[in-house]
Image (tube, rainbow, N blue to C red; front, top):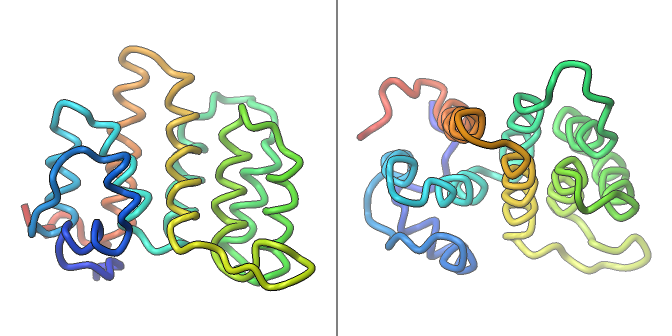
Length: 185
């Protein structure tokens, strides 16, 4: 069963105009996952990472980014508190866990991918400010999830980078469509 709320790639771009700033490929009326696969095979596969972040619902986008980061970690890597906070929010999406992720991100190191995935969770809804209502822009989770994954990918090179990029895209497809083998091409 698909978790996507869009039936075409064009709908994703129409919903999130900021996506045009990071994906130069012209949107089509293709099914989003078919468009994603085409991006992945195209000349700028990093565009597929951006599309992944925007095509998924917010909670799934955070989960996808967190899973992608986990998959890229070397064994024995020290615990990334931002990543843990994001994963906690995915498992328990209350405002309290969202705010905890946002607080960790605010104090985190912007050079760490975990900081950005914590921002993705923190900006998933509710207020951006604890003291009064400042709604989160609807595209902020996607933007932060994209930065998290690209930051992690940027630490890899060569075949390792290519394999991780492909794994991130495949993880998005699996998350978006429980039966990815039947995804329209």
